[in-house]
Length: 361
Image 1: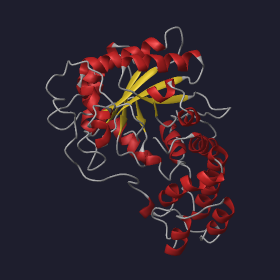
Image 2: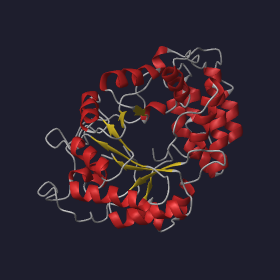
Image 3: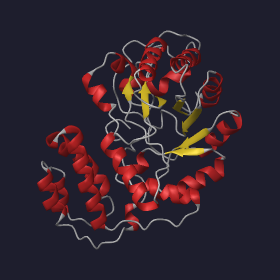
Image 4: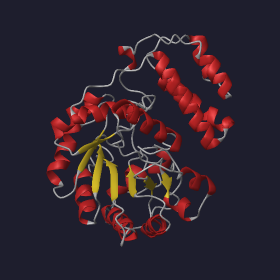
C-alpha cells in the first residue's frame, strides 16, 4: 500500500512475526511505485524501493499502463537486482486514476492487459523472479472482468493472481464478495489464486480459504495499526497457539519502534509527520483519552512521541472494540472512465497520462 508499506513498516511487521511466533513466513510487499517513475529513476521513487539488508524475499509492486514501460521497468529490476518478486497492481478505484484508464479500469481492455502482463514476464527472462497480478472483480456489477483477467494472466505467464473481491464502483465500501474468489479459483487451474478483502483477523483468513478454496490471502487495510496481524496469521495457518493480543503498553512500544524506523528512513521531521496517520489506527478501539490523541496527531519529534506515549495506561488489555475495519471505507460511486472506454474491449491504445503515482487498492 502506497504510503504505508515502506521499509519501516515492513521491518516492523517482520520483527513482530519473528518475536511472536519465532519465524518470518509472510511475504511483505514494498509500497507501490509507478513503472514510468522507476525507469526514469525519480529520486523519490528510488527511495521508495528501499529494502533492509536482511529482507528476503524482496517484493516490489508496480503500477503500470504501458507494455513498453512495463518491460523496461521489470528488466531494470532484474538486471540491477532490485527485487526478488514483482507484483502488478490493477486495483486502484480512485477517480483521478480510472478516469484516465489506469488502475481498476485497465483490465477491461483485455488485450492491453494481456500485453502488459506478458511484457512484465518477458522482462524477467533468464531469472527466477516471479510476476504476480492483483486486480478487482471489475468496473461495476455490469462489467465483471476477473475471470477473463485471471485466464489472461495465467496464459501470459503470471505466477499467481490475487483478487480484491470488490468492484471499482464499490471502492472500499460494503462487503467483499468472497464467492467471486471461489469462482476465480475454479476458473484458473494452473497457478495459485489469492484472496483479498475484509481480512481483519486471523480467523477471517481461515474463513476465506475454507469458503473459497483459495491458495492464500493478501492483507491490505487489515494491517493498518495492526503490524502483529501477520504473526497471528502465521500461527493460525500452522495450527499453533494464537499470540496474546497486545496491551496498550505493548502497543505503545510498537508505536515507538515504528517511529524510530520511520525516522531512520525519512529523517525525524518527515518520519513523525508520517507517523501521525498510523497513530489513529494503532489506538482504534482503545480508551486513550482525547487530549493525548489530539497531541499525538500533531507529534513532531521522537522525544515528544515518548512523552505522550508514557501518558497511556499500559495495563489496558486489547479491547474487542479494537477489532474490525480500519482505514478507507467510503461509499460506492459511479466509476469515472475515459470517454468511450467501454466501447471496445480490444482497443490496445495506451491510456494517456494514466501513469501517475497514487494509492493502490
